[in-house]
Image (cartoon, rainbow, N blue to C red; front, side):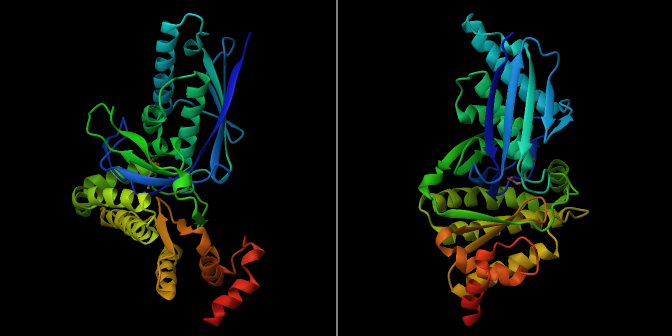
Length: 348
Ligand code: PMV
């Protein structure tokens, strides 16, 4: 009996305009549109291989080498949607193997800590959905497939694209227009780089879904954010990306991270994702920009204390000299940022 198999990778994406709040929990429909930058394929990514055969007796998933349950409603929803699309294809072409009726074996591997506030669910669901769509030879566009990944984890829809990506919230109750679209390709603005400062690799204490529900239900500030802040910022950020305006992009990114964490703090009881080290990083970034009298770095924080810094490649040494100075006692520093850069920094 034949076994059909394919592999796909999906990188992590980090939102610069945050998705926070669901208007429909089952379909993962957001209360606002969002924007993200997808990291390079060889940085943080999930690699997923899928196989199917008439002989497989059940669906099975191995995540980072461990057999895991596939029972979650979200995963089941993604598998069902993909099987439905395949089944339509099979109905129109009797020469196709009837894969929609067969079980799947899925092997998925992250090259970074799972659930540490590093958007692992985004890359995970994107790779899962993209791999099965490829196995099934589905003709649908990446935007169409992104609607299925969205049901797994909202932010996963954005990892179906590289570069600069928008998730348009849509207005339909069935989610048919809530999808990811490309704002610009990676090559449009190729010198953008991201540095991740891992403040803690522990699992986050308030998962994003319950955190969002709590914020939507209890924060007054949240209403202001989705009505009067995000819609304008969404347009401005797309414009900043299209015109490669780093200063505007950076300010919008930092303001939006602060706005999202402010709504968490405004929830009752409050949710704290950032910690003292995170706040030290925020302060440091503003000091760096003030020091150079130019915006060279932007910070953003997701549902955890880790920082993602965006900067342009040509400013890497300028930035890392400061970061090294602040955190040099921590392990993990590459020697290329040691003595020479520090000396240059100390001369100022
Ligand atoms: O897709 P989820 O449910 O993991 O939520 C992601 C929420 C944030 O990472 C905080 C923001 C975002 O837009 O990715």
